[in-house]
Image (cartoon, rainbow, N blue to C red; front, top):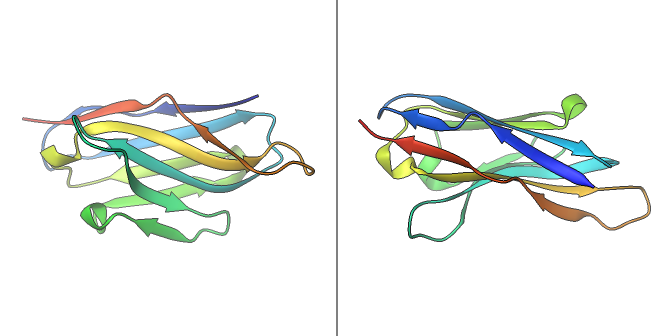
Length: 121
């Protein structure tokens, strides 16, 4: 089995910064894309940022220039550096990974348990 374990959420004032981490462990042959999604209160789940195994990235328009996604392939870990946080960034942030458990199977999607980020004064 595969687990995605997130850390780094919390309460921060507007304009502040947080760094989220997500480590994948278990039966992993290789990881394709990893990413972060968020679900604000009463709203739909939305993509925040995504990074491929080759390092290509894409971001939601609302976070461009403020958030940076990166990954450490040796550690099977993805990070989300969030700067200039706004109250509208308040949400549960969830990590996602599309990965191969072995060389013979199709890739599978996995999700972390979610971590709360609250931006408030």
